[in-house]
Length: 489
Image (cartoon, rainbow, N blue to C red):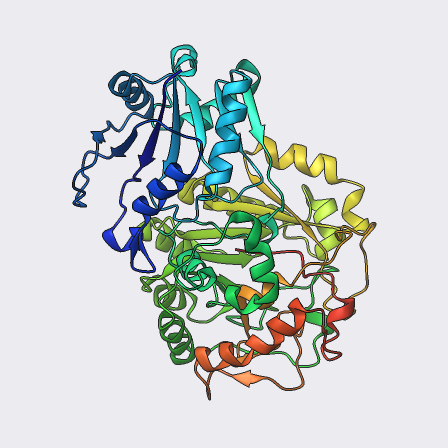
């Protein structure tokens, strides 16, 4: 049985993406293959517009159709099985390659893959028979592995599991992502890439490895809102905040860009961002950032107007996402939660937003509380019929500031380090940056007006490490918090 390995270069990979610790990632992959039980030829699958110079390798250009590309790969390699490894996977483990190949060949699998290993730590193995029997599909640009997973009962598939489980760290071991690459460079010790079995212990003993830069900024653009229902924190605040001044927002975005890492911004907080007197200008400030991955606008959608609709149409920016908080599916259920009679207007505006942005960019959100539990099934039926994506959100009581309306506890049994302290910053309309978003009405806090985001972020490193080691502060009371397992980005 002839086995080959294909080192697969994604479209758009840059030279800098495949260098880590001054070594070429694809050469590190070759070394791992040679240490494994694999003893076949190694090929390189490259896109048609490939510009990186690689000398002395078996290069196989591929078409944009993944289906045709795989047919060509099997023809040119004359292989019975092909091991696919992404070219930016410097941490690929020789033991994992050997074990996956052994399982694949022993059980005569058509496709072997892993779900518990983060991307970049495992391979995928395809048989020549698989390519022959793939279903006819118009989705020629889909990766073949995705086609198989969508039709998994039609194939002989082996699922590979390897302990320990690293999924809770939410790291991709692919060097094309700048954040993940920096984490990997911190894990490398004395130019030695550790075995997979060692990585978790290295992180547990050195949690600062994960503390890179904020990836999610929740910005309270304004403290003003249209109305308040039982899910709103607004009535519980001791102090109400006004609009964030645009020069302050400009400073925040400029300061965020200085990290040179991709990030998302969410306009949220205690107010509705559409109530900001210069809301569209605020959007422009954020959308100008070259590091912005996503602008999330969390709104009740009631006061969306023609100016906003025209703005979205003219921008045609896929980074803009709308989360419409609408805890109801008709006037009655809506009024029970929102204490408002604006269901028809909100519904009409949400439909319009979807028409402009497309279904992939607009979500409806409902809180999972006692009062919505009675009509949750009907809610899903209604909004799914309207072809909306639905976010089912757990209630956040803000450490007891709101009445607890949850009808059962969703918290995992074992507590893990807080995701928000690792990646989030919450910025109030007046520029203060509380300990975290749970401290929505802080007595004191650092201010963006006086400090750069980097200074504030570096100061918070101690909070993150303490939390990782389960040393929780009493103010705010992290021990009673149940938001540590949720994440936004």
